[in-house]
Length: 137
Image (cartoon, rainbow, N blue to C red):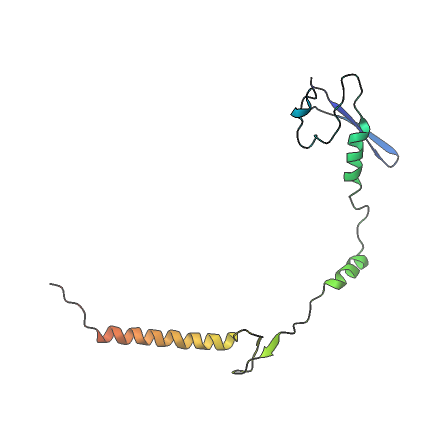
């Protein structure tokens, strides 16, 4: 048996009434979808209850802001979300630039990395020059 559900929603002084199409059969309680499982099933002789779905709509409609939040109220809420001061900054003992405590200095690391790469490139060039090229037979 396919039936439609009538819903009345009251907003202030006006009431909106509309009819929802049936999504599932109400003959068996096991065939209910999970969204409708919590609602009471209507019996064949009784009229559908409008208060069940209207209570659902009231909860949804009350969660909407009524007015736009003013700039001053928005800035008052945002005042607590400011940046925090960093207390874990120290000076590098080698170069004197600021760095994070317990971390390697970025400037010193780049200098060491450049020196390592240039030494590696020089060593590969030197080994390539000292090794004789293989002859083909």
